[in-house]
Image 1 (cartoon, rainbow, N blue to C red):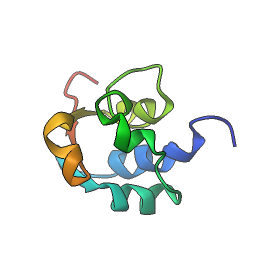
Image 2 (image 1 turned 90 degrees about the vertical axis):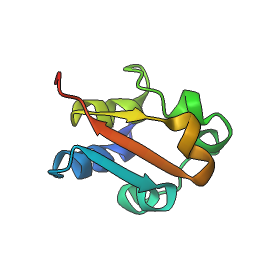
Image 3 (image 1 turned 180 degrees about the horizontal axis):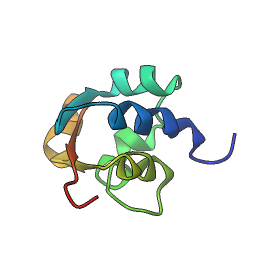
Length: 88
């Protein structure tokens, strides 16, 4: 599997939602992608969940029209908050 392909399902999931704000637990994200999240998504959460177009995981949600928000405040509860990017 090419790097980043496992996050395609996350992008598809978000793209098919009508909501402008979606909160997903790490467990829910793992269920969506069908795999465990890497340790770095826990230990370096701010960087791993950043909206950086060089990270394959971020590309999946950014191409679906979403950005992550409030990672510093929510990752400790293993929740990621996605907000629809109106500029897409």
